[in-house]
Image 1: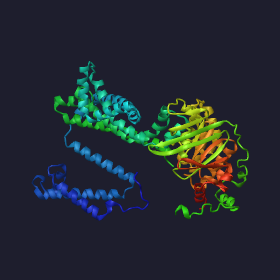
Image 2: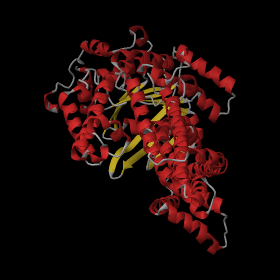
Image 3: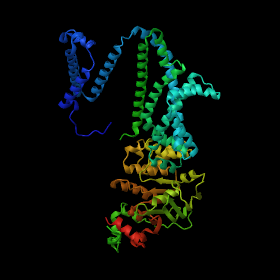
Image 4: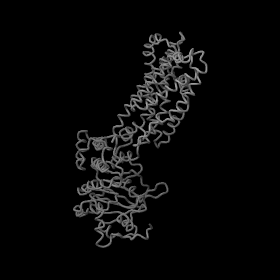
Length: 324
Length: 288
């Protein structure tokens, strides 16, 4: 939470100038597209006559109606309590995005028919690849972070070269390099291990920086107190520093986890049957790309949402030693 | 205000002096009677011996040829203006800081760059910090149990017994299952003292233990320290609590510019300081 002042400010969405300017902006924006041919145009038939013949008059009326609805909506939401506001806005945005998908005239039976395979083959492979990469990346990251913080020049050099190299290359190129390049050295990896390796190394490099910042955020006094009791480096790290750094790094690490999940789709270039690859392959013969891609998108989103929930649970769990 | 226009011994002259000091005492007057009654014999074991210790931070010389011997059972209070090297000195005693010249021996072990048994030293040297430095992610009980369990290998049940014993000793056993942030400053500092005591150290180092506390919490910490001192704990205490120094110290040491300027028995030190710097310092901290 941002700092909340104890003096209640006037609700922004109830200020006339704000509502007026919002109205003007929404009106201007919706004057641009021709909405006459949409469902909305059809509904407004009594006012504007035949939507396709309505011309400029029809455009203005449609934009005006949308602007009025929008402004009434935000003013009304302004009266609701906080929790209700969050819920209402979520539901509205969700409905809008569903409406957007509906524009594509999706063939629902086709989706329901292929959904089981999309999940049992595609999703399972995606989750498997992401989960393994995630664990490997975290391990690599902790080692790299400690190496970067250590006084050892050798360790620092290796770790900083590693983070620089793997943060500096596009993940797609890394995937190719590992899959096609390593065989030159006599190491032949099949597609899934190569993908996992590429993801782990790339995200290990990002997370190394996150963990380094987390470790550095712990007060020097904690090190001193720990060393003064007699704890060595390993014990201090495991029992004192990392447990305190963990809550600090949860939000950025949550980002990384979600990112790994989505970037596992890049492994599809190696012909791994993960979610993106499966959805494309099913869509291809029947030209029903949109059905499958949107289904895959929704599945990715649902899994990401699960990770988000897990993240907020963890944050709440670790907040307990901070409450007063 | 320049140094010249301060009366060097304001409130310290003649018969007034004891009253002036009495005003800043936060220790019950009765306990002042105990002050350094029993003399620690010169034959007592040396717990800490510092010979000609010098330390530099880059080019800045933080300590200059410091000599100090702490014998078993001795209670030493070190005072001096900020930046005078008092904290640096006691942090050298458990090797939180490295000294560059001279020799420090703690409990018979010489401290140097390549020592492999620094844990042996730290096990026997308790330290209490200005800002408590309790581990915020552990309960009070766990803060106290951690040292015995992880360093000495004491089984959990026994470590708990030890922890509770010392929490009782600092009068807060009822807070055992709380987290440090839920305690007041004074309580936190007493937990920090208990945490050090759980290791059953040969000597306790206090690094300005009361200077981060609210005024009304200073006395509870000082009382704890006073009773520790009365039980014969060897203590080296960086502190500006002159009342405490008078009540429990065997020796008071005044440091400035990284050097020991003056040391003496509390009575002599407060009523008859020798150096101008000491007089000025005492007048400054006692005059308000």
